[in-house]
Structures are given as C-alpha cells and as structure tokens.
Image 1: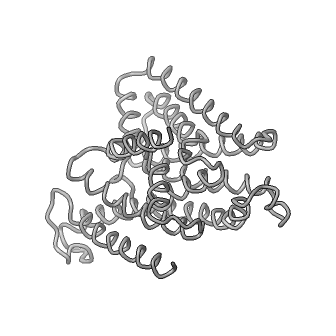
Image 2 (image 1 turned 45 degrees about the horizontal axis):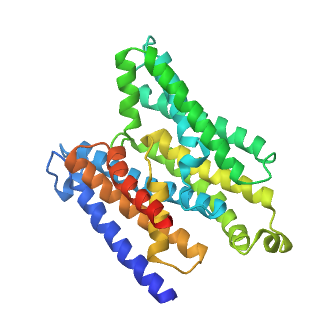
Image 3 (image 1 turned 45 degrees about the vertical axis):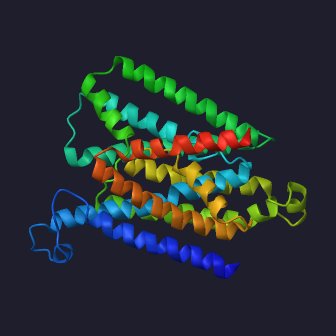
Length: 322
C-alpha cells in the first residue's frame, strides 16, 4: 500500500513540475531561460512576476486544501471547508470596511495592497478570537458550523449594505479583490505568506494524531488522553491561519478547500490521515497551478475558474448523498 501511495504522489509531483514550468511560460511576453536569472535582461522583471505568480499558487495549493481537510475530518462532513467558520466572510468584511471608508484618503498605490492584506488578516484574527471564546460554550461541535454560517450571513449583509451606499469606484475595487488574484503578490508578500502558512502547518501537524484517535470515537480517544478542547482549538487556529493568510494576499479563492479533499478520498481510500494530508498538499498544489494556467490563458480571475470547477463537483457530491 505504501508503494502504491508513493507512486501516486510521484505522478502528481511530476504533474506539478510540468504545470509549474508551463505557468512560467504563460503570458503576453515571450521569455527565454536566461531571463529568469540575468538581472540585466530587459525581461527580468516579467520573469520575476511569473515566478511570484507560480509560488503564490503553490502556497495557496498547500494552505486551502489542508484547511478544508482538517475541518472535514473534525466535523465528519465532506462539505465542510474554510468558509464553514466564516473566516473568509469576515476577512472580506474588513477589506470592505477598509476600501469603502478609505475612498477619500490619499494612499500611495504601493501601500494599497498591504493595507488590504492587513485588513483581511485583522478580520480573520478577530473572528478566530471570537470562535475560541465561544467554542467552549458549544458542547456539540456542529454548533460551531451553525455559528460560522450565521457570522457569514451577517458579514454578507453588512457588505451588501455598504455596497448600496458607496461610490462606484470603491465598489469596483472591492469586486476586483473578491475575484481573487494569482498575479499581484510581490516577493515580500509571498515571504510573509510563507511564514504564516508554516505556522498554520505547525498547528496542523499537532492536530493529526488527536484526529486519528478521534476517528475511532470520542470516548475511545479520551481514554487515550486526547483532549477534545485542545483539539478543537488546534483545528480552529490551524484552519483560520491557513485560509485567512491566503485570503489576505490573494483574495478569496472558493471551493478548493471542499473539492480537493473530496478528490483525495476518491484517489486514496485507506483512512490514513497522514497519507490524506500529504495527498491534499500535492494535489492542491497541482490543481492551483493548472487553474493559474487556465486563468492566464482565458484572462478570467482565478476565483471565477475555481467557482466554475467547484460548484458542479459539490452538486455531484450532494446528488450522490441523496
């Protein structure tokens, strides 16, 4: 079984390498290999832009499916994803507050994206603190899903209220942000995103062993010393950091956190969570690279591509459950 899993991951990694190379060569300008390391070349800046784009998709492919995998395993719900806790919605709300209320403030262009990212991170941190405070009050973990749904609905209503009154340019800026951006992150932002994802993965690794025990039953897990409250906190913190960091720098990228874990279970049935985690990471990176290529070729925003892909898959999942 280990050999079969290794072969499966090997072919997906080959696909990642091929798609990464294709992604570097997609764009208006034609580049040569020397343009990627020769700083004196005229196309060096464009080459750096494409490298950042490809790296951003690698990080998104790691973070979003991992967040969805954790939530699906914890809630035992194949439709649970990073949006289930309302993290993306509250991040979008704080970005909306910033864009709509800073419309009369003169802010340099090079600071605009940084302030948007900070607003998104602040929103996710606020919600994470609220979830941690209220999680101990919820004896049934399904109440957390209901709480996240209510928070998402409230955030969406506030954003709609703001959109009704703001000027057209601010509304346009917000809508462009919600499309998702695979080509706007610079190297410093990618460095910060990498650090945040490493922190999120640290809490993820801490959660896997308790999740393995939890999969055998709560009472069985508790008999082996698994703390349900600590597991809940680790899941909330890990999924919040992973999904919020990507939302902050790349915008909301929807449905990937639900669809990729589902495909991983289809590809590899044995219920070994470490295998599932690794498979989510490599398949997530491959899928995001492919979507980035499609986005560049079609000139559609990344979020539109993921939505066109994700909705039919989720509908098929629902139909199969009926």
